[in-house]
Image (tube, rainbow, N blue to C red; front, side, top):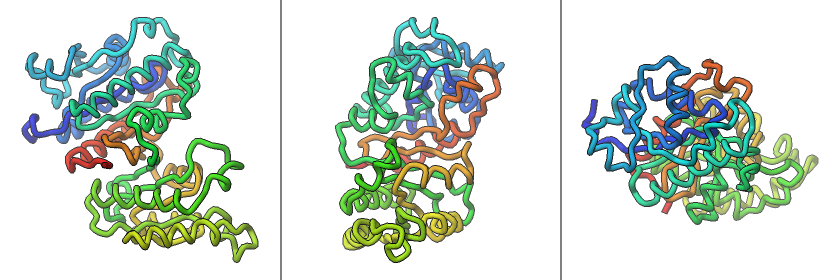
Length: 354
């Protein structure tokens, strides 16, 4: 195992305490692979974390710390599976919130953990952050009206040019060069609003983000970017729509003029197959489900969300709070493990959008 001091220190939020977040964090902690590549620190209420430890039957011990420097002062090694350094976040109100149900107190706890992890990462105390799932409805119930993690993080970091990338590591796609990322041009919005939101500059910007993360974050010299059409059969010579000719083709031209190996617009159904088989390193999708369905069919529980455009590293598992399975001891941590491993790789390369 590498010298612990040389491994990136990562903030791991517990997500919504009523969901599967605390359990998947504990299960990930018990996977030795993450400790080989990073030093994880949990952010959340210590008692919630202890409940999750008890639920899983783990022998892991929760060690409350008051700052990142406390880790060294206590002689703790966050790379060891037998202890979880926990930086407390939030009030004790969350301890009375029901498990496996939407509650504003849980939404508030999740919000405060994200804010603290983001601010500490911006300040350089953490090399990056990994977030467990939060409930958008609970977030709203607590008075924080963001569509999700991505938009909240963008506001906290003060950026306007950002995107979500759903990523599958190379271990899931052996024919790929560095895994496969799908970047979404539009995200949390209605399908009917998508065409009106698309414009060449926006799509070209997503191509630049995809190119940057695959090049600087995952080490590819010449990332190949496939750009999805919006309409079936890429519009079929405008029989099914003209967005391909009016909007997407000019965007691809702009990306290529900037030195990006972008190809498209291509029919989304076959583009995803070609990307799976290694022909493309990243795909730019026009809307949420166009990208999500394809990658989640390939490996839902090992897909990773990466927020692009931030001055910090941020990843998360691709699944949600799963209230229907929460606090039953049946959640699995493979998605959280994948998210931590991806964050560690990006942090090791000192990847940032600047």
